[in-house]
Image (cartoon, rainbow over all chains, first blue to last red; front, side, top):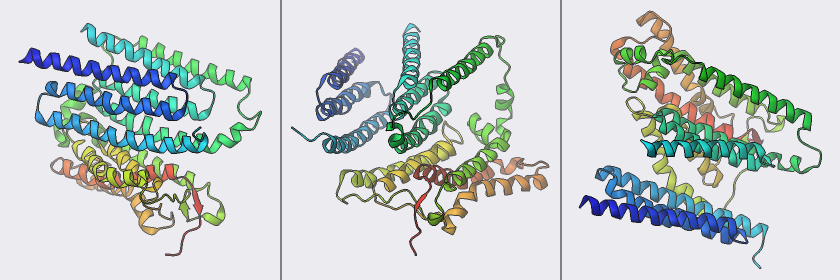
Length: 97
Length: 315
C-alpha cells in the first residue's frame, strides 16, 4: 500500500515538474507576451496542482493535507488575477495583430 | 543526507545567481524584480537552516514589502531614468562595487575565523524562557530579553513614515497618500481585493498570536495585514485615509506608547525599565503585541502608499 502511494507521489510530482519545465520553455520561446503568459499560467495551475496532489499521501495527516490544498487554491487565485492584470497591460502596450 | 546536500548546493547556486542577476540588471525595475526573487530564495535557505522565524521575516519584509517599495520607486524613476545621461557614472559604480566587495570580504573573514564552538547566548536564553511565559525563544528574545531593541524598532518605523510624509507638497499636507485608484467595480482586481483579505487578515492575526509559541510574530503578521490593506487600496475598493485623521495618528503611535508605558510601569513593579513581573509576563507581552501589530500594519501600508498627493476631502 505504502509502495503504491509512493509510486503515485513520484508519478504525480514528476508530471507536475514536467508542466513547470514546459511553462519555462514556453516563457523563453513563445513570441509575444500573451502566449508567454498562457504558458506560465499552465505551470502555476496544473503543475503546482499535480505536485500538491502527489504530496497529499505524504502529508501525514488530514490537517496538513488541507493546508497543501489551501496553498494550491491561494496560488490559483493569485496566479489567475495577476495573469489577467498583466494580460490587460500587455494588450494596451502591444495590441493583438 | 546526500539529498539535502544536493538541495543546499542548488539553493546556494540559485541565490548567488539571483544576486548576480540583480546587480547586472540594466533597469531599476528589472533589478527590483531580481531582488524579490533573491529574497524568496534566501527564505528557502533560512528554512533549510531551521530558522523559520527568519524565513518568515525575509519573505514578508525583506522580499515582499521592501520589494513593493523598490518596485514603486523604480516605476516613479522610470521617466528620469529614460533621459539620457542620467544615472551613476563609471567612477561611482566602481566605488560602490569596491565598497560592497569590502563588506562581503569582511563578513566572510569574520564568519570563517569564528571559533568552532561559536560564542552564543542561546542556552541562557532558552534556560530563562519559562520566566517569560512564551514558548518561542525568538519571541522571548524580541519581547523580553531585548525588548529595548524592539521598542526602538517601532519608533524608527514611525519616524520613517514621518520622513515619507515630509515629502508632500505643502498644499497636500494632511491629505490622502498616492493616487485614487479607480477601477471598474466588477473587474478582476476588485474581485481579488474582496476575496483575499478575509483570509489574509485571519492569517495575519494568527501569525501574531501563534508567535508566542511557534514561528511567527507581530512583525510578520503586521506585514500580512499591511499587504491586505494595500490590495484593497490598489484595487480601488477602499481609499487611503487622509494622514491628518486623528484616529490614524493615534493608532500609529499606539504600539510604541503602550510598549513604553508598560516598560515604565516595569520600573515600579519589577525593578527595571522594560522588565515584567514574572506572574504577568505573558499577558503583558500580548498586551504590547496587539497595538504593535496595528502600528506595524498601518506604518508599513502607509510607507508603500507614499506621501500625500491629494488634498484632504472635507469629511
